[in-house]
Length: 257
Image (cartoon, rainbow, N blue to C red; front, top):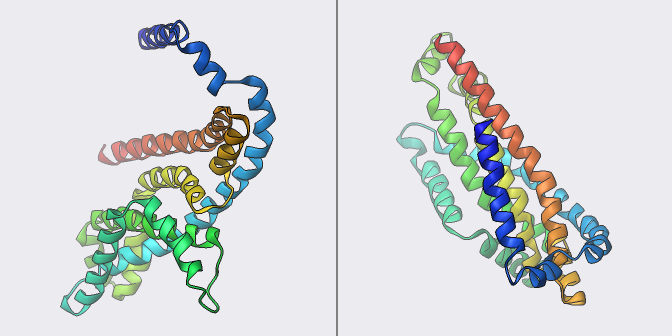
């Protein structure tokens, strides 16, 4: 109760300081125009459907591709060094590049080449850019999960006659994936927000539609419509992540006991 009361007091004081500031009326009119919010919300919501579609498609591709990269990077022995090196170079490059730069270059550059048989959709290449960047991060999450499985698990599986591939498939990966679900969800929260970067390549998604509304009305309220929609999707994902982390902590505590 004390924590809730102190939090309420702090936020109340902040709110009073904001609404009593000299610039508040102008900011409220520029960002919180109720009539314009209601008028713009439907258009921004329709454009937000593209963000959701890009997120769902990219998420599936990232889960599969990143797992493959993590497995390749975890292959033991000198014979697999070239494969490990390629996986390392890939993760280093795409974790080092800004997401917006990758999306911008692919979504505008590849269609501009006019290659026969190659998709020319900016949305398609923007999604590929998101997949490439986020797969580099998710691959490292997977790899951490794989390395967290004790080597005795593999030794026991091999002693039972399982091949290296069978051990990976039936023993190591199930444990590794289960352990990294919470951090994976954190990455996908970031992915959902970064679908707004596609606007820089031209497709009309929520952020781009908000820009159009802002330019038409000389008012920033449409951006608040986009903000509400992103929050409506990301907050449940955040709470789900917290719940999974708490559940995993309880399971580990029971295991120790």
